[in-house]
Image (cartoon, rainbow, N blue to C red; front, top):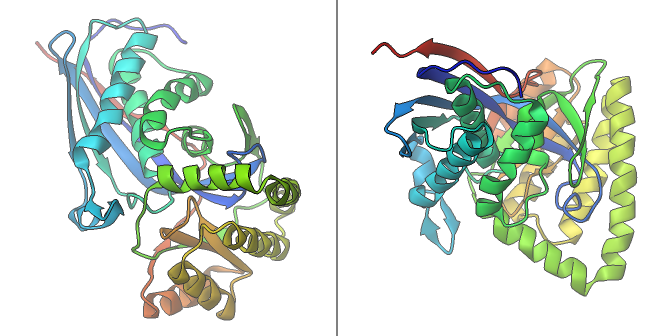
Length: 337
């Protein structure tokens, strides 16, 4: 951790969402995953508060609040905010400001429960803003360590890939528990994201897959070996800028995700539409059961035409690009007394 300045400050930070190109679910079981940060962000603003007090507010786009995410119920905003309190408290503890208080307000432009890492991004933005408000600059590895507590509250046993991608930015190969390899890409792939509008609980889906892997160990061991090779091949394809190979690997990864039962008819419909309209490859991203698909496209022109086709079939397309920087403070100012 770098030198710190003693001051009451207001700090603003942002952290990107992510897509998983290969390896979701299997990363929890030990296979590497390949992920990329994208230019949809969570924002956090932190200011001073009374000693020991953490005050949290959040601005969540209203269209997200109506989605059913767990037990047929509506999004539990109180539960969504609790990890932010944990993130703020654990950051203060880590930097030696245990007795300090902060006000925290967050805004998330990433669809919640859609497989794009919204909770990890909000957590990471909070950690970054709290540290900067107290004059501390955390190494990326330190932020990664702090983020596990709040993410575990939401997801039980997170792999770590979501907050690793958000912290480091760019494209990474991630292997549990904490092996993070940033990739130097020849050029970022043209990736289109499309939301089904069906949102779900990551914690439940991951738990279901873990239980299945224990009951069907032989099948999952075979799949695990194949996903290891898929992710290693994906790294090589990305380094070469080989979109066709990347697309083929994503297509095979999608077949495996369907086999383990984490897809959804709407996901499969949008994957089919994307491929028929010229995508080099398409698959679900994240936990599945709804959420988003991603499609690798040949060029910007194809990306636009595929996005239009997906929209006609009820999808919500997002034209995204890679965020190369990852989590960062964007402004800091001293509070006048």
